[in-house]
Image (cartoon, rainbow, N blue to C red; front, side):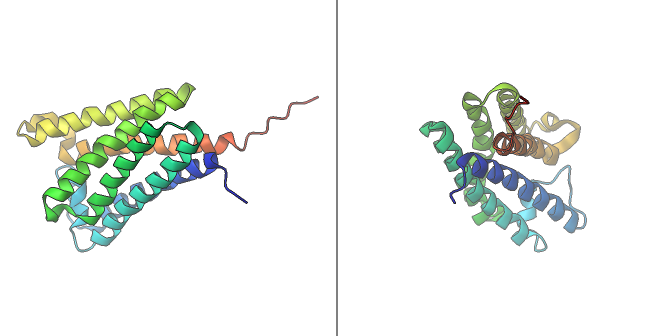
Length: 200
């Protein structure tokens, strides 16, 4: 029996966020002395203890995002939104295939992932309603604001990072959109499991 695209998209979004957030939490705990505040998340992709876990998780996130984005596309039919999902997926996969110590390719892929995962949240507001529409905009805008702060901080104005440092700033780029994926995924799955029967 074919899986309904709404359910497939919802499960994919939840799985993506759950596996990636779990992977970076475990990886950060596995490296003794990892600098949560000052270190980059991508540092976890070069430490011997965590390189496989982190980089594989990035690749899996990109693949799942593409699959989920396509299932979502089957619901809304907006080609431009599917393209945004695809670019975000390419960024995540590229960042996993080319770890931080490979140089420019990783940086380019990471920027694509950072920007387009947040843009996909904002873009999805056009096909969602109610609270999910508002959450989509808020999550994406927060991520983009922190991308701006990271650019300023990395350019030399480290005060832009504030007390959370570079590591905290990167996480504020990622965490809101991961929370959004879980919320929207739950809403999509739940929409197919609501009992619409009314008492006679």
